[in-house]
Amino acid sequence: MRFLHLLKGDMKFQFRYGIYFIYAIILIVYGVAIHMVPEAWKYRLGLILVYSDPAALGMFFMGALILLEKSERALNSIAISPVTVDEYILSKLGSLGLISTLVAEIIALQCELGNYIWLGISVFFASCLFSLLGLLVGSLISGLNQFVIATVPCEILFLLPPIVYLFITPQKWMGMHPGIASVEVVMQGMGGVANLWILLLWVILLYVVTRSFVKNMFIRIAI
Amino acid sequence: MRAIMYSFRQVLREAKSDLMLFVVCFVPFLAGSVFRFGIPVLEKIVTAYFQREQIIFPYYGLIDGFLAVLSSMMFCFVSAMIVLEERDSGIEKYMGVTPVGKRGYFISHFIIPAGIGYFVSMLAVILFHLSEINPIKVVVGCILAAMCGLLCGLIIVALAGNKVEGMAISKLSGMTMFAIIVPYVLKGNLQYICGFIPSFWLGRFLIYEDFVSAIAGIAVSLLWIYFSVRICRR
Image (cartoon, rainbow over all chains, first blue to last red; front, side):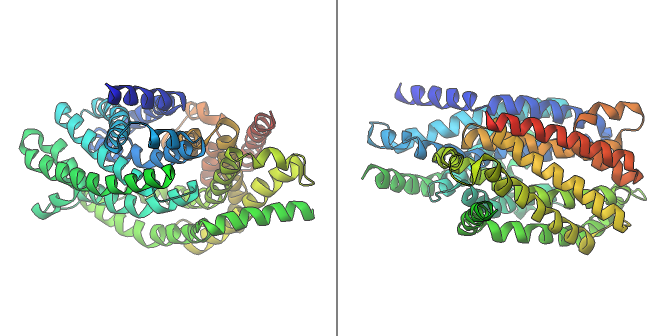
């Protein structure tokens, strides 16, 4: 019940801060762009758009969310409240994952990517991965510019390979990369279940690491 | 003037402590070298893949335009983020009653960075251009690019109340830069739908090198800057 309240609160804040509004406008812009490109390019463009934007939005916004919570002393209250670190993280992942999945599905429909259920699952987990990266970096930084810089290597490491993968001859080992695994799930649907497990493994691994960093952040704030 | 320069030094100090200063100086040249050496290779790959003679080549001018806008935008984006930090900690309000004043604060946080961005973008374009360039194209094109960058930063500060809103709006303000593509892909009068976006005129100037596009671009940018500053002052 407490988790649901937290999730509702996070979603309410994200709505108030205009994230939903911004993505409504972005969807219109993407819609126009998608209709302007030749049919043959739509599939790849759709995949690139899905994995470079909605899936990665958690990483983009997480720093600002944490810094705002720090400056408004909301984190101080959360740190000494009964809310656990897990509830705090899962609520952030769930709320941002919901926007990611929703936006990705709309883009996918416009580009006729197919495998919509698998796409939804894959984008949700990819979004969790990026949000966890954002949380990890956000728990260590003290300024927005610092966050922007610190996330650049993450973006290159996690976003670039799936885009390059779309234009080269695929190799099986490449599926170990979480971004590529995620793309593979969309491309293959049911056939890409193994990739979904790889993605899930990455999420769990990163969750464990991020959890300890967030816990330390809570301890630092509470003291 | 001394107060303004002192305020600008504060911006530099803030950016330096975040390593951001190093990044904004480095990124235009990194992006430039990636464009200069990577795009022709990518062109070879995609033309072979899609079995067409040219795919990216007709848009080399557009890529140069992107490089110019990117360089200016980076400087103004960093300033906008610093303003948001200062707004959250309340420094921005106090600046208004110091000798710096609101006008000085605006000059030190936006005009000077945009000016530096202008020279950096000129240098980046001269060093890493893919298309044919000439002095007029570089000078005027970079003025338009600097104004687009300035506007990008101003929109963030004018519409955002805090950091999260700032990040959300930065996404949107960054997207206004994509209107530079419109003259390249939309022919005929339909393209003028985007005439209210400054980067659209930069795109037109890069194609036609006409002063009508340059003047229209400067006029539209000034109009946007005027309204953004008015919102900021409220």
